[in-house]
Length: 348
Image (cartoon, rainbow, N blue to C red; front, top):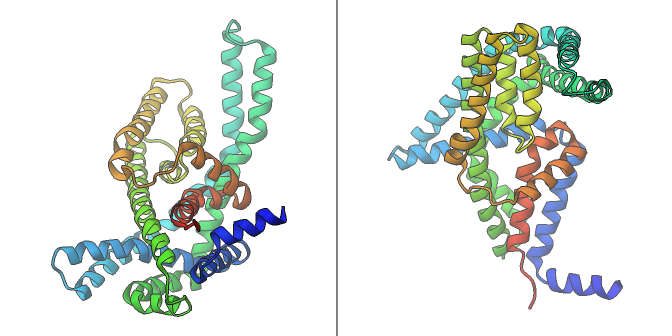
């Protein structure tokens, strides 16, 4: 065993920058695990600035000066930020109302399916029905409640944390305006020879920017279209459902499955098995089909070259470690790990 470890380190850690890369990865992991929640405003601001940097590059590509591109990009951010802040009281009110009505929705759906099973006993036996409800009622309400509680907690925290509200646009401003100076602070502590680190960053930047940009656009489009469609249909809690459906695109494979449960339950509670419910269900499924088969391939293409098995593994691992946020960060973290493994040199 000792000889294996000795050979491993001899083959994979034989230059200064490899140790520097390992040190940076360890520091990043420790920060995320232990103080991730404390420095959330910084992470959020860096992510927003990272996206806005792509917007700046777009304007610069249209022959605008760097200064003009910066102000255009930051203005877009401020408009979007203002819209989010104005909508927060309405969103938190809907979440609180839905939390209060959640037990009634669960009880109604249970009774509805119980009546259906009684009416059509040839499809399911009584024991099967009881087993289905016993298993579903044990985790479905808790999942829905936890998601809503986390949403409500997050939105309420944003509303109540004045420092967070003030810090975010300020940090975004400086991260975007002085990105070169900020990066120079980081590179100052790195070794002069950093070919490996540059390769990791270039591969990660290409993959991650495409993923983050595509997912941000997909989330915005799917959430807006779903909210608008549900408002036209007169669905209760349209805004909350639109937000949940939009956020579900951030969790590959599992997001659409999980969000369908509250969507169908609220539709059944509002209309029962009426024609309006089936119209509502058709519109929702149509949005999901168009997203999966048209919008997602159009926005993402081959931006993230991760095998579906690796995506599932990342979701299970990081979701188990960090819960809801782990589900959202699973693919970006897996992309970082992939970039490291792809370019890490081995001594011949």
